[in-house]
Image 1 (cartoon, rainbow, N blue to C red):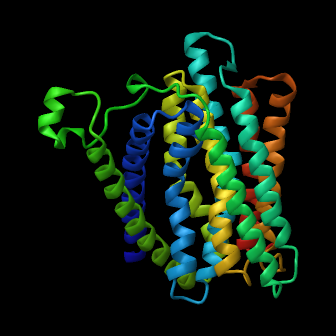
Image 2 (cartoon, rainbow, N blue to C red; image 1 turned 180 degrees about the horizontal axis):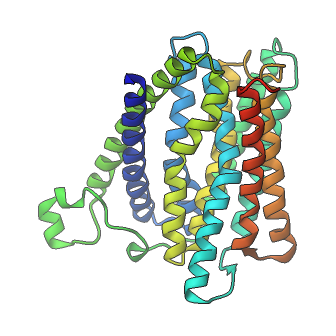
Length: 350
């Protein structure tokens, strides 16, 4: 029971920290006069990706149990899978419901060039990362080289977004959560906070995310040990569902506000981030675990599902130069299919 309590507390702390971070990082982008693509696909995406990122980082770098690396690799693989399936499905449901209420067309007013740019980088980075897992586990040098390549790919991706023209102003953002702490400036300008308060909120949020992730990893490892469940699969399913709530929550809010490019960019940008940064850590510090074996084949199968779901959603968008809410719903089918595979593995059927 204590492990379940720690798990619940850790999730609350992580999600609270992620919400503060997202809100603060958007204002940080506003202060730097960045474009919508940079705010949605880079700053907001990184902020909302931090919970599921910190869990594998803590597990791989600081985990003390023997299955810590397995938990970390499972969480690394779980993030792109959940984003490309369940997060897409939830966003699609939000679009369909919003359009039904307003009796407007199902097509989303998104910048397809931004989303196509994101998905191209995701396919490249994640394809390389998963491909190296097919090599023998002892080829650590190749994994380190690929990790360096992934970092370079992500740096080039960020550079492209940051060089775009700025088009976000204060009216596009929710009020900074800690702006009222700066009483004197809040009285003078209740809308736009000072950069020092923005930085303070980001630092507080990071502390919550790191602390919550550390508690979460410990609870997951203990539960896996008590119930003799594969820690990789537990982290693959449970951790991403909970920790990707920020992406889902923010995307639904942006859909309701008519900011469809921000909503989708938050997800696709997080997919690029997850395919490059956490995978690089796994390739360097858990290289022996980042390999397709009999024990890990089901976990790595999630990467194939992520590619299939992404192709089913974004190839039609690329051909028609439009994206619809119903088109996003196919992610739910891919998620359900893989969840059945995981449950069969946990139950010993395969």
